[in-house]
Length: 280
Image (cartoon, rainbow, N blue to C red):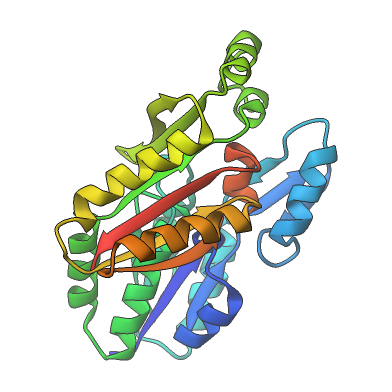
């Protein structure tokens, strides 16, 4: 059986790596006023953050249509027998549900939608693992079993640097933003039951990053091989420094750098930084 691997744009896997591993991608959409852009196709991450700095209101984000997914599945059916379709958490987007609906409409292709229950490069870890296994001619059942195994150890924590996006998105009231900014509160967020929720409130960025490293240490100190990714929103230097610190301390950790693109960046805001990892 020839198996394709599909994900959506919020995995933020660069095109060169998608091409290398033959990963297919369906974009989510970001709209500024009446202008809509397909993430990772019509709008780069750098362009997005430039636009959002000048925007009066937060952009709107939307999932791929069932029709868009159906078209991709029908195209894949020409060359593949099955597709494992890995998407961002169903608790924050309807993309997974759209994949289920589209899969039921396609003939000549077995569609296996997979809810990553997370997003950004944490989601991307599932995608690249599935792609590597598909290249080695693993079966659908073997790939899905491995993804479920990964889900037991995958972790992700994100620090929000600027509370204004959370406020503009209606998640914090003005007084909370003012007090939070005065106290330099840096909320740590994580996924619980498929949704993004607060983990801790920490007073400074340095302490927040130290706290993330403490959480990482609980797994890394065991000595098991770990794959980790530092994820950032326009903070490349901070990400590189964090990566170097982790690599210097843990020779069992393989660390890469990724980014929060437009859809996730709309909610987390510029300056967010986090770490995602799983046991290899």
